[in-house]
Amino acid sequence: MAWKYAVRECRMHLVMSVLCLVQAVFLFAVVIGLLSVFMARYSGYQPVRNLAEQNGFVSNMVSSIHLEGDAEGRPVESSEAYEGMLKDARVYGQYRVDAYAGDDQWVAKEREKDVFYSNMRAYDDEWIQGFVPRLQSGRWLEQENTEGRWLEAVVLQSSDRYKTGDTVYLDNNSTTVLQTKIPIKIVGIIDRDSDIIYKSNRGSYMDYRLLFSNMSEDTKGLDKVSNTNSSYMPEIFFVSKKNLDSVQEQYVAQEAEENLSENYENVLSTGKEIFFTELEGVVLIVMDQDCSKEMFTYNKNKIAQISQFGFLHDLDYIKKNSWHSIMTGISDIIPAGAGMLLFTVISFVTLSTLMYQKNMRKYSVYYMLGLTWRDIFRIHVLYILLIVLAALAVGIVLVYGAGYFGIWRGTAVQIGVVQMKGCLIVMLLLLLSASLMCLSLVKGRSAGEILQEVE
Image 1 (cartoon, helix red, strand yellow):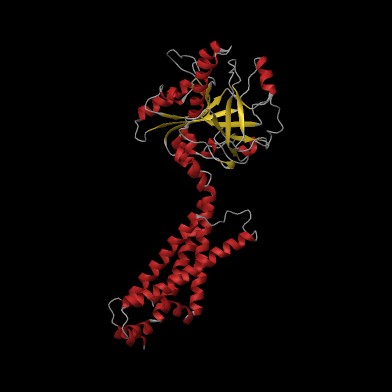
Image 2 (cartoon, helix red, strand yellow):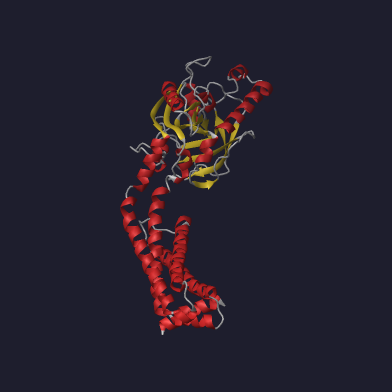
């Protein structure tokens, strides 16, 4: 019944309803526009926010060595080994892997000359979970991948040589030549324009963007470079470090215990490490949020002793710069946007209050005929809700229509989850404000007093 009366109110006050509708449409347009600008700038930071907003350091590592013990002077091959040289810290690493995936004959020929190439990178699980690049096909790497007798890889390539589902074989590209081929199952192809955690961005950024390689730039020339004179390979295979460790252990055991190949002695001497790995590229060193200043300083100094790097920054510094970068430019339009929002809300509430005041005589008659003030108030609120819902629907149609015809081309305007949440919050604000204003008109007065006042 209340909905029936609310629809009737819309028909009886068509002009006022249209004015409120226009005000609400404008209000939702401002909200969508402001949030779209923010999300456009925030979208790059969002995928790595959980990684960047920790306590610790980010480093672009070139090499790291053990400082003492049996491994003194040797490169650091795992994040666990690196953690052992620090105090209460966790290391999220990526690795250069001395291995080549594919059947390119020139690799074998170059090995005869003691020249080795690699086109494989490995990630710790924290990187696998922390950032998923945009994929052209297939899926991303899995965490805790320690089963199976094959490697799973996602590939960045300059051509369409490989497809998801293909199987290639690994040339370990070292002096230890295995008799058994190790298969690599390609589970995904990375979009060539996607950002990815690979090498630090070469720009002068001091915010979250230094975590990434600008793959759209790095891949432009891959199809033009020569394999023998460039650090970039036409294909780069990304694998899980745990998957790599598990697979190589199984194959070393098979070679040494079953095949008894002519390479037997060399296999035994590898210590179940067919593929030499070394921490290289963007690495995070993370500590508890409440760790002491002394421990923080100790670990920072220790990192400087262990590693050579392109940079070593506090994550808190990166987080602050990231938010500063996101808000730069937006802060200039926030006052104007807030002013428009406030003006429009006041205008809408004023119009709805005027309509309520204009209908006071009619509502008093409703009361005298048996409706309660609660019933009458519900009718008016539903009336306002119908206008607001209609305004939201019109606003969404206009935004999508403008997008369809290319009006938003080159702008950040779009409708997403955040924009819709913002519109719903504004909708509740409108209903609450209008309701409070209308309640104030009847507070403490009887229907008879209201009828006498409006006569």
